[in-house]
Length: 137
Image 1 (cartoon, one colour):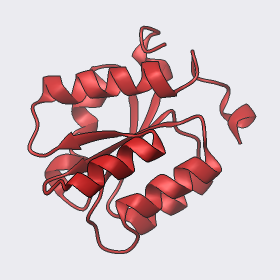
Image 2 (cartoon, helix red, strand yellow):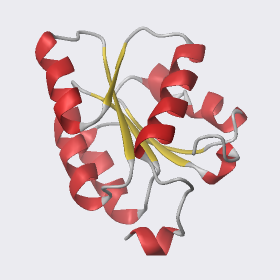
Image 3 (spheres, one colour):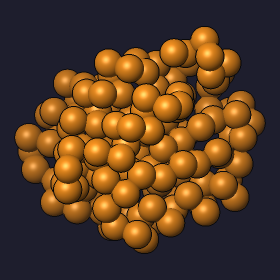
């Protein structure tokens, strides 16, 4: 569960906006190990290079979209929790997120909201504790 020490959880932040990618600093202070990708295409590469317990992804980005990132996570790392972030949510986004079992976080958001969504996503979707990275591939 997310109540485990956060340092065990590995997070990938995917966003074309530098201020959102800079959230890795907050996640690090909360004890998470955080990586960043500047767009969906880079995220797809990151997913083949390493395992993540949680992926935070923007929806609208150059290259691969956030929904393409979600599909890749589900195919390659099905135990990973996913949170999609968007500044322009639509009803369709909410429905699509629910269908795929991912959380939807509307931008702009406060750090405490992000932290809560991360903890809930990990508690709900991720394994009870992070697995050995080699075992998750």
